[in-house]
Amino acid sequence: MDFAIPEEERAFRREIRDFLATELTEEVVREAQSEDRISSAGKDFIRKLGDRGWISLTWPVDEGGAGRPAMDRFILNDELIRAEAPGAVGTNVGGRIVAPVLLLYGSEQQKRRLLPRIARGEIDFALGYTEPDAGSDLASLQTRAVWDGECYVVTGQKLYSTGAHFADYHWLAARTDPTQPRHGGISLFIVDMRSPGITVRPLHSMMDLRTNVVFYDHVRVPREALVGQENQGFAIMSTALSLERMFVTGDLRRVVEDLLDYARRTESGGRRLIDDVSVRRQLAQLATEVEIARLFSYRVAWQQSSGRHPGPEATIVKLFITELQLRLATAAIDLLGADGELIYGEAEAPLGGFFERFYRRSIMRTIVGGTSEIMRNVIAQRHLGLPR
Image (cartoon, rainbow, N blue to C red; front, side, top):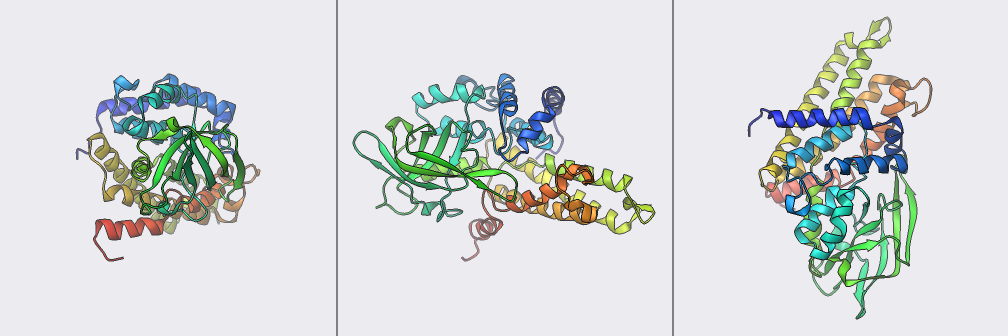
């Protein structure tokens, strides 16, 4: 791996920052960090990403994309999350996850109907994987899709379906053949959220971000909504899940910079916080770990850009980055003291109350997309060959 960053990648990062300086308003950031995640301003911002060709950045040219390497998508997500902009996490599921999977497994009709609208930022999706009894173990899902001769009839419940309250479609995993082994008999569907029989109920989390419970009551889903082959959904889901493993560190680098700035200009007991040797050591350690995380995430992006499938690196980077965020948030609260617990909007809250919310969201980040315990098991069993 060449550690030198090519000039074209540096230029692309500068282009993104210039775009954000012009188009990313306080209203868009406020929406992105609100409980509902997105509204009119955020949707307009996503469409502007589409106008720049950035949603379809890495798609093949003959499918309407720019044919750029995965590294460019990594750089884009890194800058978006650093700026607290929509499009990198929680929104743009269509561009980040659904479209790349459709390019591999979708029918020509699905690609013609959906890809142009995803590329323009006109539609979005919510993931429909998790159930009350099927979280990290998705092979245990029980939502049924039964073919009645005319269409699939779907009955069941999905949990933690973030974005279902504003999404146009549900990226739904359901069991189509209960007689097959657990990992077999699962199929993947694109379901219109306006379909009769779908009920979306809010589920409020400690992150101050809304997620949802989605109920299916004999929802009729046409054959053309099936993605790939029937009963092959688990393999397709595995591909989709691997796309979530491109973790970026722009937000963590910004946090370290904010903490350094706070320590330099804040006094306690007549001296600056930065003059305390224990504070300097802690900040130096965190800065070192964030740099390690940055290089690790670059390695995974480089593997994808080189056409290589990331192996243990993708799992390790997920575990390391999410737990680093929690360590970073804990250190921030310790440094800020009691004032660090003041919430967003309170006049005396340091840095606008950012770190109180950052701490709560950091706890959840070790759960979302696979818990730290599951990540450790995967590393131990699949990559180190250790016994169960």
